Image (cartoon, rainbow, N blue to C red):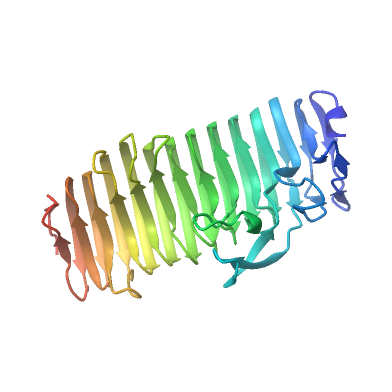
Length: 384
């Protein structure tokens, strides 16, 4: 249906109507509204929705309400999309319900908008909810996304002992040149996942009441970001990761976290990482984070995080655990500046190859303003 419109055609939606796709079987798969030629879609916040995706009886897995592929431009203005998955409680590894309520509970992986192998994609002033991934963008160049992305889901049949099968507001993978400016609420893994192998991106994201993170950057490079995260129930504010199969470098941004169960800003090099993480420049402010306000963990025994520059302000972090506001572990070269106020303990640095310079003012901590283990070679420039 959608692809019958001529190239560079314009489609207008009536916002007094609901556009409903019951996903009748089409050659064994769910029928997605697909576009392969340039188009302008003026959705006018008319609701585009579907029957609830199911795993058995229909082939709904990896289906979407809208799909774009090919050379654009694809201009989608004011889309309002609901995946029509029910809202409920997150389940644990044993398929038992937890106390985390308000997220889409999905029977298969589904998308509101699916973009694959495309170019010149503009999704503007979107309002998309109740899909496992509200937007999924893969192998695509020149992307702009703005709007609200809420209540992404958990794909319950995909839960394993090592993966709780969380979705996200938007996921980008293997994509180039993007600009994302979104607000998210009640998303599972994150409002924005830059994961993996993306480059040359700008991200501005505001998140509230997410389950795991506000922003995730994983094995990607040349990313500038602003992330403002509040009340993460079981995770972090901003999470930056380097792992096997990619490289994380040239990351610059602002991370502000108010309330999370784990770490306000968390930078991690995982064991087995084959490339060094380089040139990470962060302005970070964390308050009311249960474990740490800021942490770096390098589990690699060979690769470094080089060129780390952090300006950090922490307040009221670690109060539930009685721990440190800042934890810096492993092979790290760089500098950390700023201040810590009213935390149980100040800064811990450890691990062989830790060559940080720390220039922090630590005020009103109950004990251990500065601590290090015997393997670290950290230079503390105490200001208090």
